[in-house]
Image (spheres, rainbow, N blue to C red):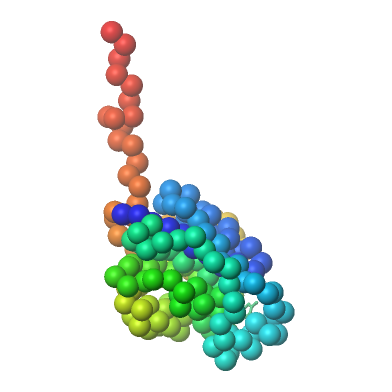
Length: 174
Ligand SMILES: Cc1cc2nc3c(=O)[nH]c(=O)nc-3n(C[C@H](O)[C@H](O)[C@H](O)COP(=O)(O)O)c2cc1C
C-alpha cells in the first residue's frame, strides 16, 4: 500500500506530528503552503465563512498513493481552510484518507471528524482513521502516545513490517 503524509502547519505543531507519523510509516511528506499568509483574525473569519485560500501546487499524482494521512490544525471547529482547497484540488475518488488533528479545545472526533467524513464522501474517498493531539498539553510523550493510537487504526498494510529476527540475523560464517 502506497502511503503519503500531507500536512498544513502555521505554527509548527502539525509539522512535528506529520514528521513523526511519516517516520513510522516510512512515507513521503508533503506540505500544503498558502500563496498569501493571513492574520489570525482573517483566518478565523475565512474558516467561519468556509473560504478557500489559494495554495501552492503539490507534486502528487493519483497513482502515487492509496492512503493519505492528513495532519491538520483545527480552526473555528473545522479543519484549517488550506485543507479545503487541497481536497478540492486533489483526485480523491476510491482513496483512503486518515486525519490527525492538532487543536486546543475542539474534540477532533466530533465536528472535525464529521466534516471530514462528509467532504471525503462527496469526493468519493473514505475516512479510515481519526486522531489528534491537544497542543496545550505540551507533552511530547502524550503526542507520541496519540500518534501510536492513531497508527493502530490504519489498515495493517500501511504499517511497515519490522524486520523479523530470523531475517535480520546474520547467517553464521562458515
Ligand atoms: C485561526 C485559528 C483558529 C483556531 N480555532 C480553533 C478551534 O476552533 N478549536 C481548537 O481546538 N483550536 C483552534 N485553534 C488552535 C489550533 O488548532 C492550534 O493552535 C493548532 O495546533 C495549530 O497548529 P499548527 O501549529 O500546526 O499551526 C485555532 C488556531 C487558529 C490560528
